[in-house]
Image (cartoon, rainbow, N blue to C red; front, side, top):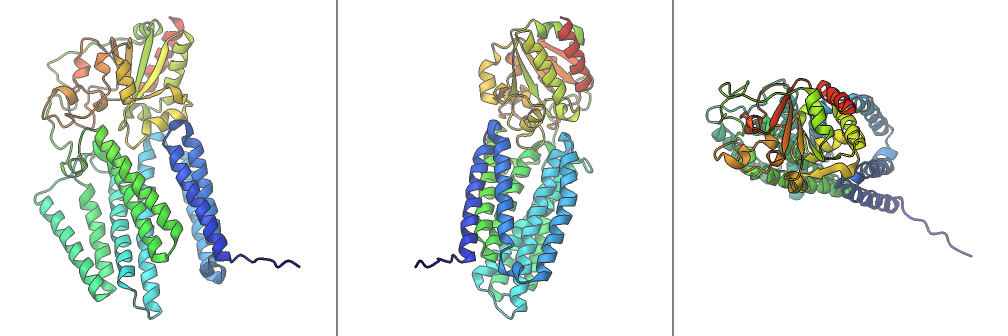
Length: 473
């Protein structure tokens, strides 16, 4: 006679959580490569769905009809808002969407920590010091992420200027707020008075605002990555408060990957993270030209027909995309142009700068939407190694990421930033709406290069004309 072995539900839940954690790790691995990014995203979503499903087996939900109903209502409302927003968002608004979603995650983590603390106090329990510390960290980091992400959204949506917003005594005020939060953290830990938690919550929200306001639009991709890391750490802190290993590991993964990405992006800009966060990049225009470029200098302009012939008879063409490509919704048209050129035997590739666009990987996502094959995408170093043998560098909506001032002009806001060396190509075709500078607020010397031909106008319209010109060449 055999005896059935009963496995406790808690054990099954932990095993499923472990499986979900493995799924998250493999998803991150997949997201590290454009070729496997879609599969990694799908795996991460499946792991999250599995984890959420197992969370409904927790006693607080299984034995409480009220909690179960509230959880289901919250999920339905979230899906009603998030699904259509995510499906209808334009690629130009994707950074804003990421910022908002990230901020909501940080705010949720802060609220969870506070609610759990209130729950413990309502039961007459005095939380241990380490529990209070976990709550305080969750509140502090989550609130900074929430308000900071809100300001990042407002900047990206151009509801306020994308320029750094500074004011007299700014550094002193920031320091005072930071010192006040530090002092209150100590007092809250010593006294255990729950009122201090709400004061810290308010000051943390203020800190997020004054932390992000001085950061210029060109640095927003790095800022989004950093705030994403903050949200992960806040989630990990709430996991400690709830004694939930899944939240701890998932939050730590997001926090660690966000910090690594932030560091890589800082290196790609040739600047340290403190310099990005505290230098108010973009506050000073160090070159001439302003909105309309340097009026004392002329540029060479061309037409789509002549450029189409040049492209059609080139041996190698490198397309360098930037935010202007996303703004014009021209990713599908640039793919059509590349296909037309390859049909004529031209070697075509895309040079992707790490911080092109408004968020990490913006250009990769944009081109993936147009089904551009992954093997046609080249990272900056790989593209630069081939630029001197390139017949035509086609710059579509990029500006600061190809500006030679990064190499030649000490004192420039972008000096020292690695760029795509489009100036080394035999011919440079620059698609721009106007001579207006990029986010750094400085003229681009490449526009005045003798090898450069300007094609002014909407990028999508210009690319459509180039497609037709290549076909007729």
